[in-house]
Amino acid sequence: MTPALPLPGPSVPVPADRVRLIRRSTRCFVFGILGAVPLLGIGPACLALLLHRQVGEETGEPKGPGGIYSSAAVFYILAVMLLYLGQAGFVLALGFLLSAVQAYLLRRQYLRTEPLDWNPARHLTWWGAWLALAGLNLSGTLILLAIWAVVRNLSG
Image (tube, rainbow, N blue to C red; front, side, top):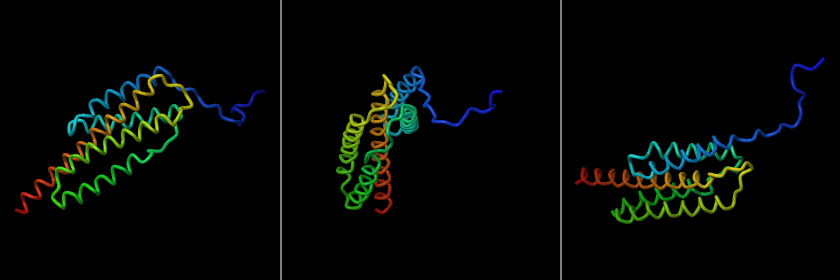
């Protein structure tokens, strides 16, 4: 008589479906390209970052943003301080600088990590994530500058 349930033992990781991984990686890249458009690409950028995280989880890549989100937090704190001092030009330059810093951090993380499961389109997810982050950074910078302009005009 055989048992109804399988015997407990070490679980074997299920290999990811390669075709699905390649399609999701390509979709992440396309959403990243669409997300690179400031303001109009906020939705696709969020989808690209979500797909990047999901593909990373499926392939077993180590988690951790590697300072990407903390650099954005520092940028926005510095941007608000600069706007308070009336230096709007520096805020726009910082938006581009933030994208360059995040590109460096993403590249460093890409080179340091190796997924457990092979994904031939892995580089597309990383490009999509960087383009999405660049679009979100520029969108945030433009929104911050627009709010600053409205507040400045209202205060006289």
